[in-house]
Length: 302
Image: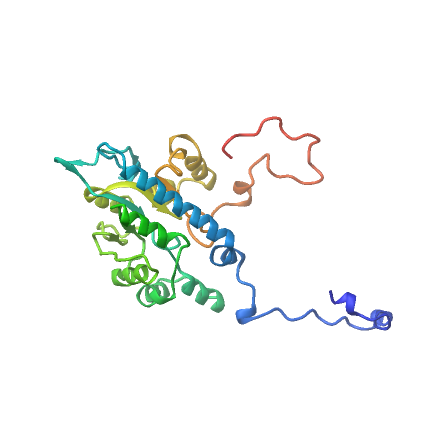
């Protein structure tokens, strides 16, 4: 753009003059946000993907609630394994139906914290996150689709239960959920935090077991595979192995069929992998090494 504005006379002096620097990069609120945050917190595409997921959650759970038979739970991680569906019968009746949700970037967006971290360049710390848990409720926003989805579930007699790795303030978590327009959450009833199962761990299988004792869990939703089963986040599993576990076999059939994932490219366990792991053999194209013909058969599911 700048070259188009330079006069012919100025061009004749280019050899003996220093070309001015380009305009200084924008700072503060005029600076570009990180691309992952532009997408998750600012794009229509992210809003559409979230609304799509939430519509699927509500449609699926409501359909399950109308089945004329004793309900069964959805498969979920309990005790380090993915437990098969269980009968929800309890005496002459059955447990109340529930859908279990992660909280952060699943039902609420932590835009206030991410704004602070980005504009200051600060790294995540437990100290600042604790303060955010306790004071940040008015700076969160609902995930698009969540308010309508939660309302539809409650109207159908299905209880939303929140299983979060927040750990410092049950009151702050409940305030954030309410401030986002998602209604009441009661600690150790419909709201479970890290440590509520007696284990100070980010693993959620123990809390899922507690929830399943009281509720018939017919669906799960989250932005991390650990929101469905801890086996996915085994540190001995490489990123390709983790992807393979989620995308093939029996577990692959659960996506959209009891398990619902929300997009989060900003942080979390999904953001791992070397160049060699993310781009395996057979995907490393270059103009110099490209074969004349593409493979005749592509692997389904990749």
